Image (cartoon, rainbow, N blue to C red):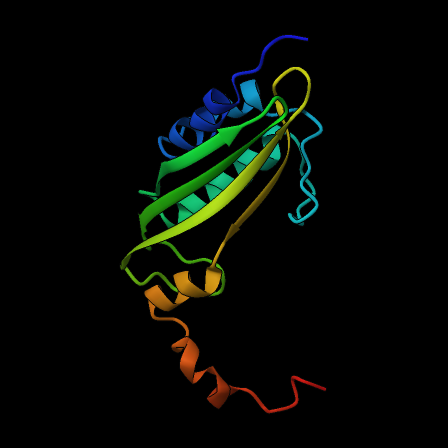
Length: 152
């Protein structure tokens, strides 16, 4: 089995594919069977990744990722990142606010033996992002919007 440079894959994923965006990278580093279970669209492989990037960039056309740290093993790489973008497009049920936001998150890319991304797990706090955009109330005021039955 060839040696896979997991950190190079991570850099291509965030710095080139998502930040530039160079969608041709998806054809080079994403397995045709890529289909994360947490994404509910009827595409898979590079087409799925391109769809996701295009959607995010419709909302944040200047979206840019900075890798803060990463650790790789033979078949996976963990990435912690900061992202920044200006909310210039409608999406997620909200009209554009023209606000620039920053958020941080983490992603694990799982690689097949050929070094292509076969799965991904990612997390960032949508609530914090929506709060920065001014489209949801502060966390400490959420109780005012709940009906009290959420524990039943």
